[in-house]
Image (tube, rainbow, N blue to C red; front, side, top):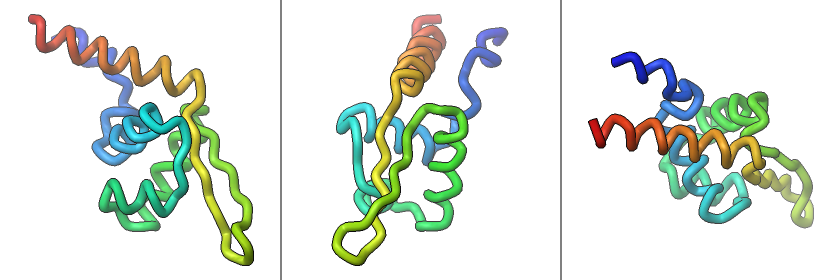
Length: 96
C-alpha cells in the first residue's frame, strides 16, 4: 500500500497515540493522570512525551503543586492537525 508512508510514524506508537487521544479530548492533563489512564511506566511515558513535545504536538509545563512537582501536558494546534490527518489516513485504509 502506497499510503503507508502517509501514516505519521510519531503517532503510530500505541502509547503516543493514546496520549494524543486523551489530550485531544481533554485539551490538557497532568502526568499522573496520563500515566494511570495509559497504564504506562513513568520512565516510558516521559520518553514518549518528550518525543511528542519535540515534534511540537504537545506542550509540557513543569511547575509545583505545593512542594510536589507537577507536569501538565496540553495538545497544540499542530498536534490536533497531525492527529486529524492520521485518522483520515486510517479511514482511507478502512474504505479501500
